[in-house]
Length: 431
Ligand code: SAH
Ligand code: SF4
Image 1 (cartoon, protein in one colour):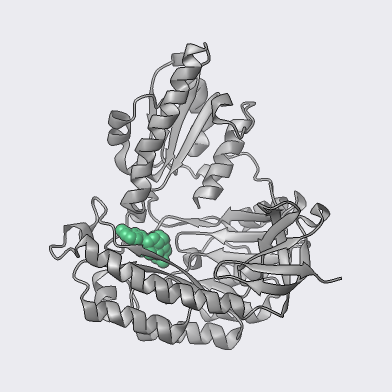
Image 2: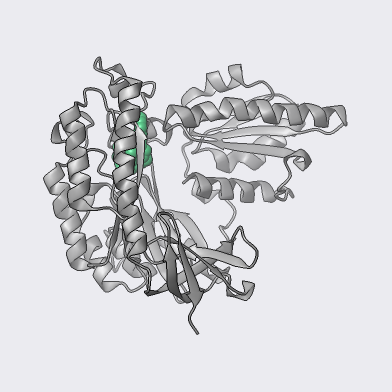
């Protein structure tokens, strides 16, 4: 979501005549987008601002003006803190107000004062942003934002606000524009993407995500559709069946379980049990046997015992994941879990994370190794680090690289997989 937001903020600034530069020292405007989900992410902001403020000072000595903008969820959550701790910030803008950037920059230039906008606006920012054009073959498209779930550990409902779905017509128009400007893959985004329930049309008055995907499947030239992140108990049969019916829908589902203990799930205010979650996974696998499953995990939630952590390990061993993200529980200001008395010591969290990641990485490695010898369609999206190398993704969202001609960039190419590591595949172009 932050990558998507950053791209759209850049496009908003481009309407003022700015272009992007890879060199910080050259930038007349520096824009820092921020994440508040875990403490570590938020802390990075303050050290980074320090570095940017130095560049700003050096530029000022050379007579150049620099505008420093901080955007994103840290601003929404800690606006006063940002302005108190971060000298040199000219504009601070929350994640729902960034469509106002051109206006704020103009206002700043006129008034040369500090401007702060963090509050949720009355209008949808999507109505005010410049048209979204593709910058590479694979593009993000936000269809839903915000969250009404209030998991007891999470800041998202406070920083991104309540759930909001864009209309089907709006999404189809944006998708068509992305395809006509070069996208072959679209990743639909939402904090709870499968809770999308945007306004439909006369043929489909009340569509769900499965319906939207079917509709996007009709767009000529759109070869791959993905979506993330899904909330487990809101998965519908229609969405599961779309994995069987819609050829362009990739065999991959990111379905965060968080914990393998029913007691912990309840304390987290997650609305499913482990058995219900496993049933959903089984239904996906029935509809699309090769589907890759991935998840998020939190270890060391307040009160999590050794046995409960062990249940998470056991659950992972039963389900078997193709890839995963796992985190130490991070107490976030204003969330109910941060006030719980039985916080788990840091050393225990670290130990549990190590154990879980060892298991998850070994499962991921096996998922990668399983592909050796197969021929897979890979969407080549970027140049690799080594000379002549191109990088891309298999349908299962596994990284793959190949030495091939750059004319293949942006295309889906058949690769014979010759080698695998725990994080990538190597292949040869099949002619
Ligand atoms: N809406 C999605 C997740 C969005 S946040 C869902 O409910 O599944 C992305 C991930 O960050 C979460 O799945 C969770 O694993 C992690 N996360 C959120 N808050 C956290 C916290 N306070 N500490 C550690 N990890 C957290
Ligand atoms: Fe956060 Fe996801 Fe829970 Fe919403 S559903 S509160 S985004 S973890």
